[in-house]
Length: 117
Image 1 (cartoon, rainbow, N blue to C red):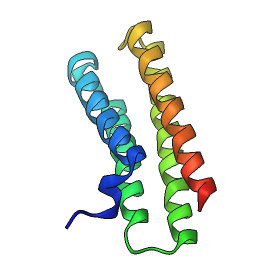
Image 2 (image 1 turned 45 degrees about the vertical axis):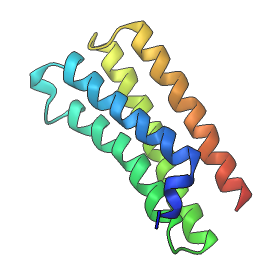
Image 3 (image 1 turned 90 degrees about the horizontal axis):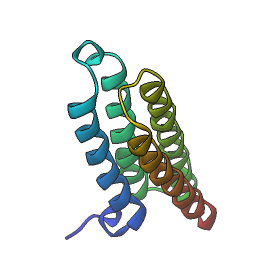
């Protein structure tokens, strides 16, 4: 039997985006950032996925809302990390804009889901 979160489009998109972040850091971030910015952005991207999943399963709506708030904050953290990465020239403008727009869209989806509960 599938878990509830598996059917949520917002979770599926967050899962795709965390893969994009992991791939980006693998190919674009310098080794000296491995335990600093690389770790931070990867943990934040994973946190979006994990909070949506954890909050959706067997929780009351108010609890799910709290987890969606955590997911939203983590998505914003990813965006802040993207700004730092761009500023330090780890990523180009095209990669920045693509992920910025995708996380902006994801944030709107999380907010919309939260507002339906």
